[in-house]
Amino acid sequence: MEIYISPEFINNESQVYNIVDEQGDAVGYMACVQDEERMYVYGLAENESVEEDFKDLTTPFIEGLAEMKPDLDIYCHLFVGGKRLEVPGDEGSEDDEKSK
Image 1 (cartoon, rainbow, N blue to C red):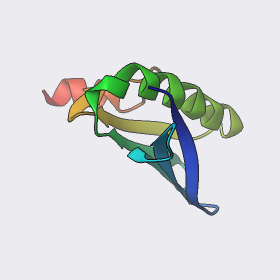
Image 2: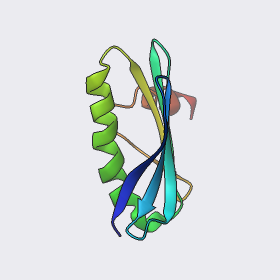
Image 3: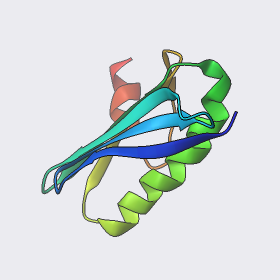
């Protein structure tokens, strides 16, 4: 299933995107919130069948944000069907592993 990013809200500190399928139906969301030091990226895709597409869509998007603002620490929490999706370069991954 093809999925796409559809912007819903964008300002200087936050962004909200719908993740939509080829019919334009929402299958998830992604939100980015930042301050001077950190950026938090949260996302959820409801259906496990879009896991690889969701990862393929969000990973370069997050990498692009990191290139635009290299001084920010980026913390990502992405889920597909309730399961955590590992994203390369996530600053929070090590902390999450220590807390398990």
